[in-house]
Length: 309
Image (cartoon, rainbow, N blue to C red; front, side, top):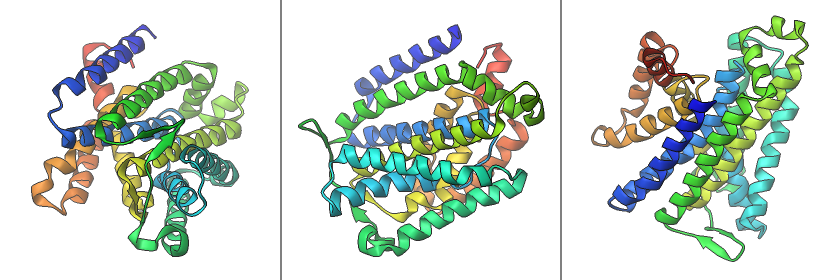
């Protein structure tokens, strides 16, 4: 617990210092996208790393949040905050509804079921062109709340940095709680967990809904931040990106989620001169990580220096 607090303080210090060294709006934008991905990956890691349940369609929940904010504010005149909450609740309710049958499956059957869910959400977004703009996407108004409008990379930086810091703190407290210990027991052995009284189904459903809730909120914020949303945000490749961030950074590692998101959000910038190779690079990184760093970058380094989670 003490080490987790030290890590949180280090992250807070980095976030406070970054605005002093970032030279222009472009770098603020890259860091903001890192924070957006890190928050989604934190929620996904709770599901995959700590509970041991795979999801290949998590971008679908991100898309639900993004399009809830876009559609409700643009076509129905909702306030951005109300649309954000509505999208998050809708994503969580969908997760609660589909989780019981999905989590009766195991292994690659579970992976295919979650993949199918993501594909269905993506198809619905593309086909409902009247409201969503179809494949072309649609504009999203700025995020305004309590008389203030958040606009510009620097203003968004403080919003996203604060939310990232809160998310890390919340995840640390969650996994060190009885609920988190039950998740880790579930990951270790479902049979053993049932023997000691853990309601396996309830915990699976709850963490799936919580992870979807995380993703939807960040999807809404991302839509307002970018000012435009397309179906790409809900597609399979985005789910693969998020999953790769979890694996590379470290499953069952809170700070691994942040590190994985930072590294792989920066990757497209590094490959800007060879456009089109991002997919290949993600595949190679995923394969190399699974072979040489099966526990992920942060847990592997922590084990070498004798540092805890």
